[in-house]
Structures are given as C-alpha cells and as structure tokens.
Amino acid sequence: MKKWLRRIRAALGMGLVWAAAWLGAGLILLAIVGLHAADVPFPLFFGLLGFLAGALFSGVLGVLGRKRRFDQMSFPRFAGWGALGGALLAGAFAVLAAPDVQFLVVGPVLAIAGAISATGTLALARRANAGELRDGSGKTELPRPDASTGIR
Image (cartoon, rainbow, N blue to C red; front, top):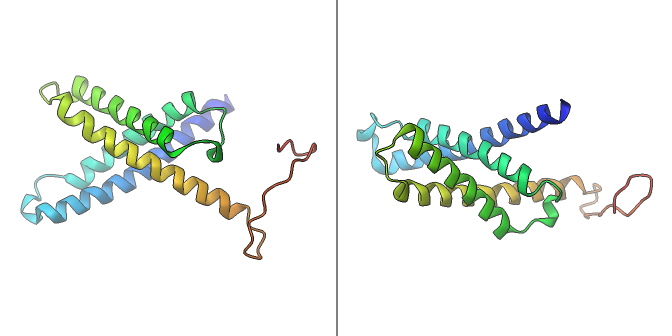
C-alpha cells in the first residue's frame, strides 16, 4: 500500500511541477498574443494540460524506467518517454474532450512539449542529485561502494 501511495504522490508532484512550467509557457503565449485575447484562458488551460502530461509522464517513467537511476538515463530516452506521455495525453484529449480536434495537430505539439519538459525534469533531477553529493568544500564526492549501504 505504501508503494502505491508513494507513486501517487510522485505523480502528483511531477504534475504540479509540469503545470507550473506549462502555466509559465501559457503566460508567455498570452503576452505574445496580447491581452486582447483575455477571453482565451491560455495560462490556466496550459497549466491543466501540464499537470495531466506530468502525471502521465510519471506513469510512463514508473513503467519503463523503474529499475534505473537518473544518472543511468540518457536525455534522448527521457525525451522519448516525455513525447510518449504527451502523445498519450493528446490521444486522450482527442477522444474524450474534443473529438472534433484533429489528433494530427494536437499530438505533435503535446509530444514536443512533453519531450522538452521531460528533458528539463532530468536535468533538474541530475542537478539536485549532484547538489546532494557535495561535501561542503565545493568538491563533488561520489559515494564509494560499501557493503553496509548497498551502494554499488
């Protein structure tokens, strides 16, 4: 039971991080389009799509990358998984929410946004892991293999 709760919490966290990033993209798009289009809720809609895409990506990551650490994953693979999560969201959106919206239009946009977000997520995760390994002197010290800790 704890394992599922941890996975749900991770999916919610990933969704919130992606929602914040996509909300920012929506704000930038709103600034570009202009405030004349204030009736179009770009930021809120993008934030919702970002949350859903992040949660879907978390599920994809949990299935396809469950036995790997962040330092063992490549950026292209992570981007591919992010694109898969974005394409899954586009497919669900096209089927459930807006059947008249063309999947061929929405699919690539959400796949590219998912790939970019996933790559940023991996970069942030690696940076956070590197920050944890600092010993305070500015040098990065990698953990040594130890039988008591199980680190290899």
